[in-house]
Image (cartoon, rainbow over all chains, first blue to last red; front, top):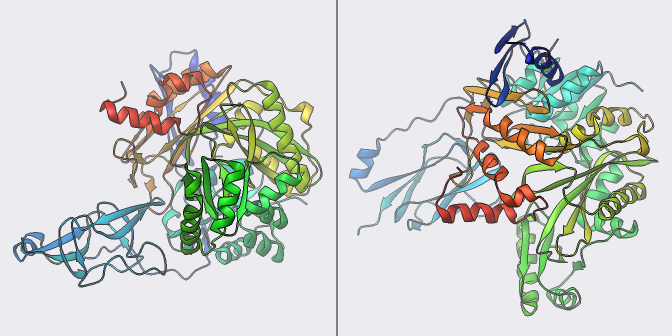
Length: 162
Length: 455
């Protein structure tokens, strides 16, 4: 039997007038810890049942966890006037403002620091990524629609000579 | 019929919440989960799981074929779509019917009727509901002519837009034509549907909605909710009942919602949204949501009903078991949406892994969540972590209870907007109640201007 909010309220009602300040109930299915604090009761729950997967409707895909290695070190890049544009946030990288539209930039595009070069979608919010420096795009490291980890290199550009 | 096994085609807190009611009713559950959610709390709570595809919602939770195949694989006799994703999707409802599976929601015709803004508006007019002055326009010239009738300020809205997208404000009537021209071009590009309409802009509007449930014949209302605390058209706090409404206005809104439901012969649970002009007390029909809503727990708190159980009973083909005179409202309830976002850094989303999750508990407190220590918050979906609901004898006691509840709430590992709620609950304008929808954005802006932090 799993625990409901009503169960928790009922347990708290029973122990509220006692001197109990902490109560832990552990079964095969859950681990519940109730604590009394100045602001009232709190609960911490751990669901211990295991998921019962009865099938999948899509073919199981290959492992998706590997993160693309970032080959070049940034210091080496910097020395050659190459600047990496990194994503500030984990999410899905898009090269264009909407599906079917032309990409923000292509290899060879001239950008300034404020130019938007792509979008990273996180939790249904679109975060635009700007170039951060003036220069020419020389490499696009991530394909449209690909998942990116925080700080992953999206593109590289050659800095414009000052 | 009796539903024996439900496929829950959703994730997060609402999946956990639907599973809870099914369990109480003795209904088995199968969860349709994406690869990112196979080990999440709802997957552990459900009796069975079917993987419906990769993490990206477009390949899993938004994939009608995958959901229907999952229902067949799980031998489910019904699908509960929750909210968002495919909740109001006509194709899913149709595919379910074609496969002999019950879609827990309204009819396909009703989904179509309320899914298109212009159609919904026409139905509202036919049902005798007040709508915001305005209407569809086919050209910039038509827009300019209509603007003369309805006056400024006005909004040019894309028919296919929503959630604040595809909307333009006109304050100078002379600029209506050019704004409409631009809006049509943008709507065509963004939504592949260039249709736009004009609406008078209500400067100080409140968002008040009425919960209804119908069995295809009769319709009853379950009271109202105020959802005016928003940021960028996203609701943050909801309460029931809507505070400070004259009882005549409240009764008129309830009647209007019932009239709309009866006009459609509505079957299922739905919400009729209204825009209430705070300056003159007049209200207008906005739209209808044909699903269970995020904020339904505040209605459950003050009515003592289980709305998911009502949805299931209606879907089983039973007549309405609630009579209007039996529905009673007790006290006041408030819901705060705890989101994984960094509210002091422009509300930047904060996916990651939760290390600790301590939630308030006890009398008058309900927490709907799928989060516990070790839970992952994937970057693919919305940022809702938990809904904290406080119920009290009146609004003041509900607010006090919520303050204590938030103070004892602790989620580590991801950033949350908990302190934003504490900031809100201390604002005099909120304590008075009856704020308009731009209120919270103004309060946040003031706070930024002060460079101050909530005490």
